[in-house]
Image (cartoon, rainbow over all chains, first blue to last red; front, side):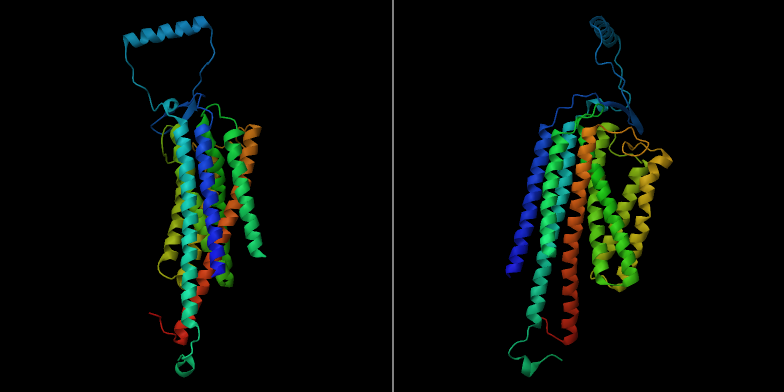
Length: 143
Length: 231
């Protein structure tokens, strides 16, 4: 009985440790640096995303020229985005979701192990009780 | 003695996982192209490695079981297969979340993704076969054969990117572009932590399986000796 209690305590400690790591993971993901880097442009039809070649730093006149041409372009026509805009997909929630899923799966497996262990120990106890010789066994006895 | 070793391994695993998490979020730099989502890499890749360990362990123990026919090898095989399937599920769940940002799609029939899914399905079939009631000797032998067939898919997963030019990144292969030194450190720690974790999980599961086997043999013994089922 004491052995079972020790094992149960050990199982509880493992579950607790896993829960602490899950919280650490979620916290770390939530506090990770914001996704400031540029994304990639991809083709939703199944092409791998090629890195978007962007010049983050340009001269002021070039930037102004770019803004003017963009403004002109906007005023003259509306164009649809080609493929999916991976740049616009937020990375943070995906990271949190990935860590969450991984830790939940791990926790579920540990819980399953604990449950399986408890059931097996109970089954062993039942069998031992069943096979324990009783006072009346001498008269009755097994076959 | 074994119990102490198990405790020590559990402690080492907990500490290593903690350090690995710290390095993932506070040491490894944010990747320039993909941003923060690339940090999935530090448990997606070690999970794939842990899946390999599980599946190879299951196949090796299955071979040993077919040769020796001892219950210890059978317990090890089923334990390693379960842990392998667990990590395969982690890989298949985290991969699409990363792909959504990197490729713009949740899933694509890339050779590596497809062959990984296939390996997962083979070992799920293995576990399903084992879970049909109390697996007898023929079921165990058939399952052992299935594990050996399943492991043949692993080299296909590994070399699929090189042979069929898929979209999957190859940064840590010989043809890859390399990693930042802090990324290498974090990945190395993650690999170490996952090695300890996979060994700990297989060991724990195998211990439980051994107790189950003992309970099964006791059950048979009780039935043979005619002990009545208690009310």
